[in-house]
Amino acid sequence: MTALSCVLVFLALLAWLLRRFEDFPGPLEVLKGFGSLAASPQKLKELGVRLETLNIKVSPELFTAFRLAGALVLTAAGGVAIWKSPFAGVALLFLAFLAYKFPEWQLARLEKARKEEIGREFPLMVDMVRIYARAADLYQALKIVPYALKGELAKQMHILSAELEIAPMAEALENFAHRCGLRQVQDFVGVVLQGIRSGMDVDEILQRYSSMAYERRVTEIKRKIKAQPLILSVLPGLLMFSLIILWVLPMYSNIIQKLKAF
Image (tube, rainbow, N blue to C red; front, side):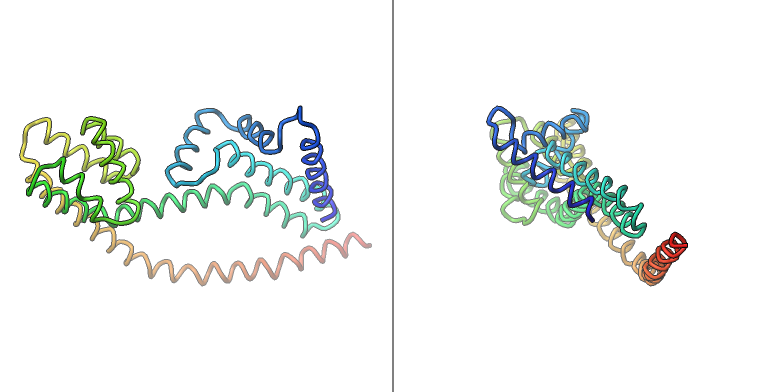
């Protein structure tokens, strides 16, 4: 832990020196520069789109820099501490791994939750678009449906409604599918646009697609229900393995320290 304290004191001193001299960039600018060097422009652009989609107000450069800086500091501290205390060194190296991987895991978890939220409301959205399109037309249906929905899909439908005022319907629908990032939404947009371009009856197309959307949703729910017993049977084994690791690792560290004493 002494090594970690030295690294933290050094970083705090460096930040203080950077603040004292106006000619030098601030700490955030330094971190942004570090983040821009640590990843390619294409990856930073993709990360920026993901953060913007999830409404996370952090630049991709800072997100990347904090991940790498935390991992490097903990790795350096673990490398120094492992010679004095193997258990503490391994723990710090494990924390370094978590510091690097956890932000990405959390980002993937938020993206998955967002897609699941859109998927839950999607069959209802298709059905409502079909009903309102029959009463008026597809354009008016896409303008009205957002007010009858909730959650992330309602937000994306409101953006779609605004884009319909300034862009062609095909472009607005394609942007909507890209923002949602869900296969069934992309299929829905493709089917609707194909029907419009071919002159087919949009109501008939939406009716068929609505039935398919509900069937997919029911199949997905059944699959999750069948997977629950398997998860419940594996979980106790994982917990038992974790308890064994927590019991054996300190014992192993104690044996090594006693052998070094001789």
